[in-house]
Image 1 (cartoon, rainbow, N blue to C red):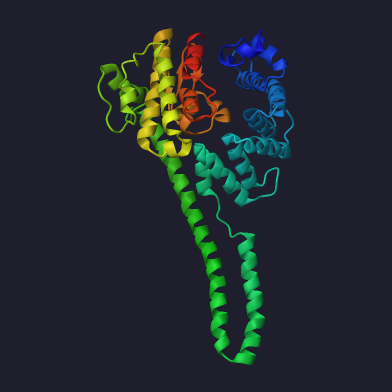
Image 2: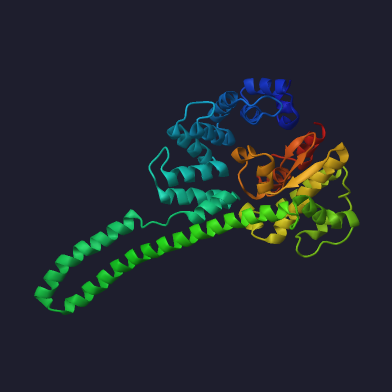
Length: 387
């Protein structure tokens, strides 16, 4: 096999070809083999084999492999449990800009696992992960305890230590006028302390909000089971209805001129047009992930493309397709929670009855936001049609 020509065909490679490429020193092939063994894709699950492959890929600076290796060390799967090594590999992954590594590193700092507890570092890494769309990091950031930093505590102590002798000296030499200045300094110190207490109250409010969100998710699942809310299959049909009926999209969907293109005809060839649409937006606007997704109409646009890609695969390969939101995905495949965090890319996923689990938004977002571009929506989709 010619590694230079086949290096971008990982999704469709056989196990033998992946092994050959991995043995030649290819980090991505090592990582993919780790995923195959870790998730049991066509082979029995084997945490030790996954650990071996991800270890080799991590040594070659593969950020996702470094994160996954940290997960195995943290959980003691495929190797002995070692929080310090988990922290080490999370930090490596985070430093390379991987959002999962950043979120996990923040959690280690928050809990003081494998390192000293440091809420300021935890907040910093959660913010980096949240900016790249990891919803779990955003939730953890909101619930992060807001403690009075040592710098502020030291400042309060310094003011008090200075104020006491200054009061004695000032009253003795200048009389009661010095008391005014001392009172201001003491009030300032008191203000810092009270601010810390207020932050503690804010933390309680944030924790309450997190509990309410959890209750809402449970209520949503109950209503969905009772058929009282749209399931994701219905949601997909609604999003694709304008394309099927050749009707204009409402302003709730950004880039209606692209979505209304006659080239979106549910053919395999139309997937290349999806790549072209994303390339056009990336070239013209150079969008940033976080800022782009702040607009609901942009999210709706990407969801239409997500549902479209899945439907094209199902239609042209004769497969049945079922769509899931993140909670539904975890109900269908509980183990996916270990590998796929709650984020925008996993807000709409599908299972094809022959090809298996698919995350269309992964290649869509990669095509739109990555620089340089590494994924093709058409290429990724065709791999699922050939399975």
